[in-house]
Image 1: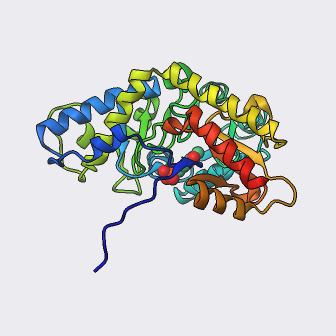
Image 2: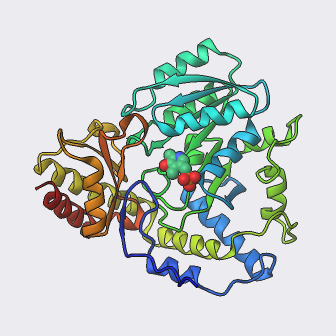
Length: 371
Ligand SMILES: *Cc1c(COP(=O)(O)O)cnc(C)c1O
């Protein structure tokens, strides 16, 4: 017989999940109720309202998909992309590559606008791609590239899509609650996020929001959405506005208690304060790292405060350092991904993890391990 799993206490300073507060864990542990219980339906409505605040939107179709960020991504693509559509996909890291994969699996053509890893998406190159592909009906890009620690100009990119009569699909998995994200003001049409990054909730849920132009496109589809589970027309009947909900799937009841609590905490702190806190702790981390002689991988103007890419010094054993941080300091930092594997560390300061003590703990631990 095996015994219960007792996880170690870690400080999570990688690319997600981030630290989950006791308050959110307590919410998770409350008694499970039925997913069609009237009390649960009330909770669903509150979550939608809190998500509208987090996304800064009035979009009625704003809800949490019952699966991780990747499912939110897939929900945006399968509902908005039809076979033979042309989609401009911006690729400046790992997650843009997944968007391309989604477009192709929808039977559409992906026009790739490529930028170097560590650079933001070039708005000029996207403008050119629209000129060369006047039939492009969607622009897809990652707001905060977690693989490289780079922020792109979502406001300019959404404006460019609108100007060209195209819809925008925005990956806001890491940006939501960490940096400003103004869905309505920027005219973003479909946006997906995750719970385990700057919301500091447990992993496994993906908040999404669809604007009026996206909803119109979904309602006018000529072909069925290839995914039954992620077909928003069906999901809407479950999460929809009326009190009567049609059974679609069983919502992850306790995870949604946790999400509700983490969104309440965001609301209590206030989005602007949360952004300032991420900025402040980022500044402290960068100055501490630079004092130690380390250098950042991204130019200051594009750096994500919630995900700090640091160049691994010449001759340092990447894996050994991370293993020692974990075993001796209970501290998790992220490895480089894809083209940056072995070249950078990714130090996350997301949500609950973005705190002064964590910055000092991380700096002291790195100093000790690097000698
Ligand atoms: C983490 C992440 C995802 C994927 O989210 P999962 O919850 O792991 O599926 C997608 N895009 C970006 C930018 C991310 O950081």
